[in-house]
Image (cartoon, rainbow, N blue to C red; front, side, top):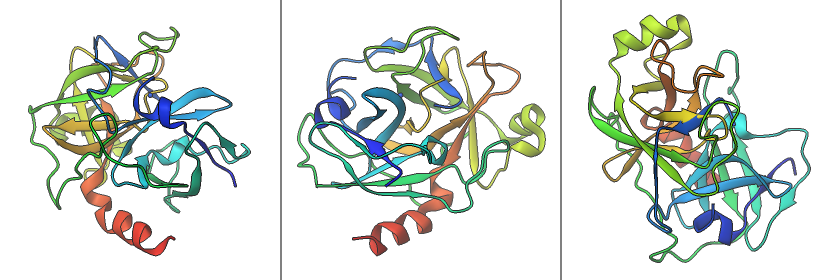
Length: 236
């Protein structure tokens, strides 16, 4: 199977590729974001993800490495990888993927789920939200050994179009701005508003990571709720 993942230890306690890194951030204490997942290939972190049920992880479709062999780390592997069939890069479209774990986890204080939005629940412009991951702390810098987090603000659609033009699609995407933000190896991690994951880290400007001219862009989860529910229901 052309997939990779995940030790239970690294998913939840240790230790986010795109096009996105957390820069200008605050470190998080262990277990403070118990839904966070480190997706790894050959024991190396490549993407973030987050738990949405006892057996399902949500991440970005471009994290799927079609050339890789199955790589199971530690206790939990991947039973099924389900990237969106219409996903693409350059331009990014339908950048979403479900990973079905080979076994269910038992939610507790250290390992838990994050809520998904309802239809149309995308976060309002200028609302303070957060992004997090284990990606590069600065362009071309090292990956972080601990989970980092930055506060960001949801940008209005007009500014997103001004920066990205036709690459930005209102119905599929959310973009944000802030003094910090996502960068390389943070792809697939969540954009969290309150207690809800409203977006998936998708793309931005490399090597700048946190460009003011072109805000970082996130897959709008609410736009894919039917796709998520259908695939979770149809796969055993």
